[in-house]
Length: 311
Ligand code: GDP
Image 1 (cartoon, rainbow, N blue to C red):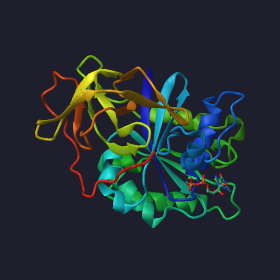
Image 2 (image 1 turned 120 degrees about the vertical axis):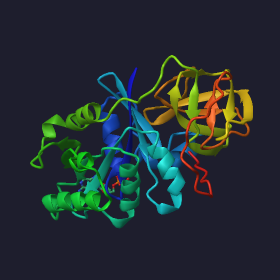
Image 3 (image 1 turned 135 degrees about the vertical axis):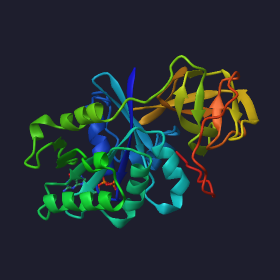
Image 4 (image 1 turned 90 degrees about the vertical axis):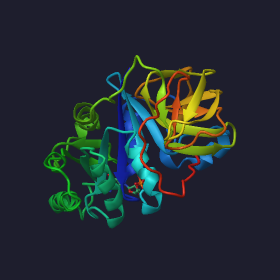
């Protein structure tokens, strides 16, 4: 299946959760009779209630037969190494900005990292329905922000969409295109974001990106598969950054982001973002790989302390 991996970068309250809910709805990722869970990305209560893991930090929708994995980025500088690793899993980003508030200082850090790893963000000016929206000024502020962060010409030439996540639409024009809903946003993601550069026919390799202590599955490591595929029950190993084998074990559970839940899958394919349970030592920045692999993937240096994510 074709794929796109993107990050959403937004200041708190600029409308990320509402936007992702709407993307899930309009892509038909929710089944007709399935109640749309509110607050997809803050679903801890729901998670406790149902005793299953609902992903808190990523989601995926299918649009025109392309799977779009949408990864959330922590917005704070304390998550330094984490942010960089997450951004290395994706090939594009949506910078979502409130049309009245404009870009906030706290998002500068993440935007800076995104530009540094070479992403060419899409800028989405949200909440244009607000009475106090200052749409054109805010676009200028985003441009200045990018320029101050040493964006390249290409990055400064960002595509812009305007809209209202809450009202379910984004358009190339601020005057709106409610009739088109989220289609312009989906289509722009498919057009503007490159598919993951991966080797399908090579042995399995993946850099550990997020580490989590899962109450049901134990140690779980999430990452994007760089090459090959991995199967449930396959025996894999972990190489540290010097290429030393630090762990070997069986994949007891393989999970992928499907809609608002993480679900068990049998095979994870190159390009997809998956979570692996079953190994006891492998960690972030290390290479999870097939037994025949001897060279680790190049990983971003880790800024200690390593943050443990709980999904
Ligand atoms: P998050 O913190 O970025 O996930 O933001 P939320 O999605 O929780 O939204 C924060 C607040 O902004 C909520 O009260 C939303 O109802 C509101 N909001 C979201 N989208 C829009 C919009 O398009 N227009 C307006 N006026 N408000 C919105």
